[in-house]
Image (cartoon, rainbow, N blue to C red):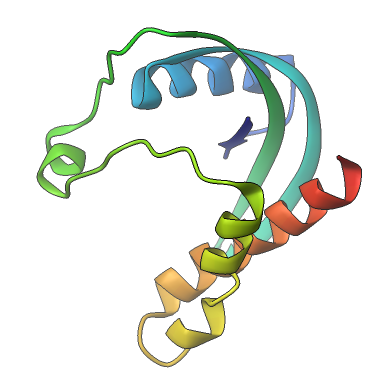
Length: 119
């Protein structure tokens, strides 16, 4: 299980990752290790994304989504790694349509490809 967290890298970030996983997915996890940092620059701000490998401890069955996430229909879905790589590997399809989606897909594709190298 992979977790993505976008704050300063520290043991605190690992704890935040576990909290976010619980809130947004209902999965209680234990962070095993951090494996990747991706820095992104947008206009005048710098965004650092930290990726962690997590162990699934428990599925509580209880997601705590924001109202906007509920309206957007956010759901949790388990998919095989190769399927995720295929989905996010289509980032170029969004380059001229939606630069924010392009950036998101490219970042997640990069993270998944890096994860694939270490498993």
